[in-house]
Picture 1 (cartoon, one colour):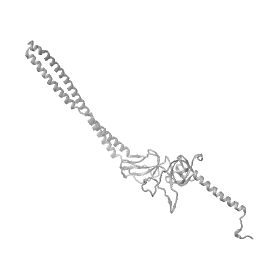
Picture 2 (cartoon, helix red, strand yellow):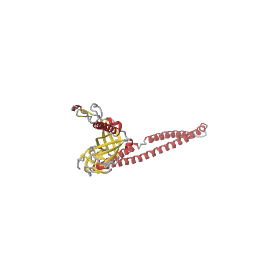
Picture 3 (tube, helix red, strand yellow):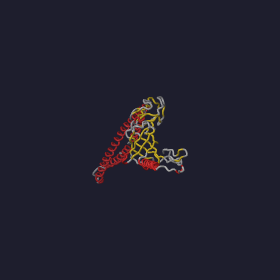
Picture 4 (tube, one colour):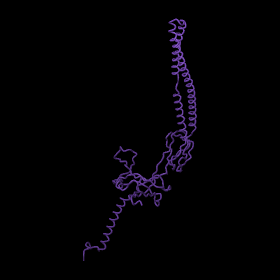
Length: 349
C-alpha cells in the first residue's frame, strides 16, 4: 500500500487543473489586451465650462431675477445694478458734447470771417500792385518828355509822387495780407474737443448698458448667495454660470494606458447618476502634464493628480478630456463621478 504522501491524483484531475490554469492565463492575457486596446477608468468626473458672473461696473444691486440652480438662456438678465448714477453721467457727457459742438460751430464762423478778411487783403494787394504798375508806366512815359520840356516839371513830379505812393500802398497791402493770413485760426482744437466729448459719451453709455448683466451662454446658476441692496465693486464675482451648451468628462488614465489613447477616439461614458444610460463622446485632448510635488516651479494651473496611495507607489495618472455628444441633461452635474471606456479604429463601429 502506497504512503498517503505519494498518492497520485487521477489524470482527469490533473487535466482539469491544467485547464483552469490555462484558462486563467488566457483570461489574464485577454484582459491585458482589452485594456491596451480599449482602456477604461472609473477615476473620472463630469465637467463643463463655467463663467464667473461679475459686472464691469460697480454699484448697488437693485434686481436679481434669478435663483440658485435656475436655468437661464443666453441674453437673460442675471442682475441689475442701479442705473441712475450712470444715466446722470450720460446726461452730463451729452451736455458737454453739445457745448463742444457749439464751440466748434462758433469757431467755424470765426474762421469764415478770417478767411474772408485774408481774401480781401489779397485783392487789395492785387489792386495796389496794378496801381503801382500804372504809376511806373506813367513816369516812364513822362520822363523823356519832361527832359525835353514837352511837359511841365510839375506834372512829372506829380507822376513820381504817385509812383512813390503806389509803392507804399503795395507794401502796406502786403503787410495787411500777411497779418490776415497769420490771423486765420484752426478748427483742429475744437474738433479734437468734440471727439473727446463724443468718446466720453460713448464710455458713459457703455457703462450704463453694463449695469444690466446678462447671461453669455445657456446654463445654470450656481453659488448665488447675494440679495438686492448689495453694493458690488467692478469685476467682483457674485456667482457662477455653468455652461450647459457642452459637457465634458475629465478621466484620469494611468501613464501606461496613454499609448492606446488618441485624440478623436470614440468614448462610451457612464454617469454614476444612472449607470444604465451610456453617453457617447470623443477624446478632445490628452493632458500634457500634471503637478509634481517634486517640481515646485511648475505653474499652479497644472492639474494635480495623487501619485501615491499610502506607501504604495502607483503609476502616474494623466487627465484625458472627452467631449460628450448630446448628453441627457438630467445626467449632467458638474463634478459628478463617471466611468469611461475608450475605443478606436474598428472598435468604434
